[in-house]
Length: 296
Image 1: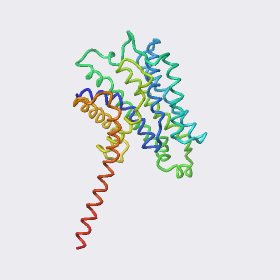
Image 2: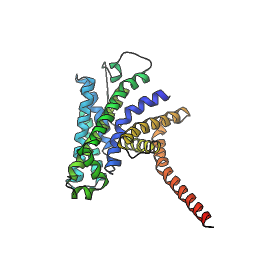
Image 3: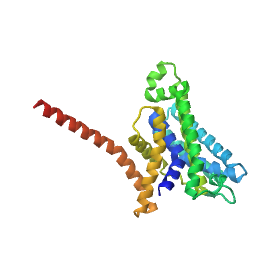
Image 4: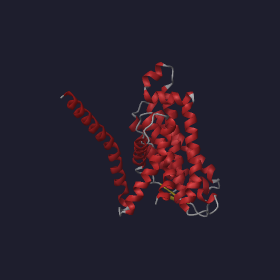
């Protein structure tokens, strides 16, 4: 179960990183996630079926995801549509676009090699998944760390932290926000392509609930690795994704039906949101009690 959870967690890590960029760095609730995820899957599988190599197909999926993010960013920053509504509008439009890309609701790889097939047979499919996806995830983490260490990346973080201050310091906040949207949804689309490779097909409805998965994984990662350093924050997203998949695998092992995993995912998100708040209140109560005891 653990090996499978690690493999699945690595496949989902780019999505979690994408959600982290909008949700934590830009402080924006972006629902484009549920459209860009199947977009990446649809483009990746369609590109493969048209004769493209696996890695090229994944790159195309990433690029189309960035375009989806740019569209949401323009709706939000240039047309002044609220972020939540801008994401819903792009998500709605992507449903039709994904249908046109695939030609039908479900598109399977037929007589095509998946990403896992790129390496010789060593152990189980779960082990091969880890061997293939780990370098990709490490590469993504490394590139993001380098990016956030540059002036451009620092400007993006400043915009998310304090938009008014960033503007007064000459940072073009709108451009930085659009860039954040683009990188986020590109990573989410990449994850969609990786998941489609692992499953062997793309489905029009595979994006449903992905925002919940991403948010729960982000919060789990932050609980497990509490650090202000960007490198550890990025690594914590991968850890959160693996822990989340481990929890789901454990739930299925104790008899929870796959049909109930969506509501179980929602409950996980509720717990990881509420638990830190309860813990903080208990700490404050304990400190107050200790202070009152000292006064006596």
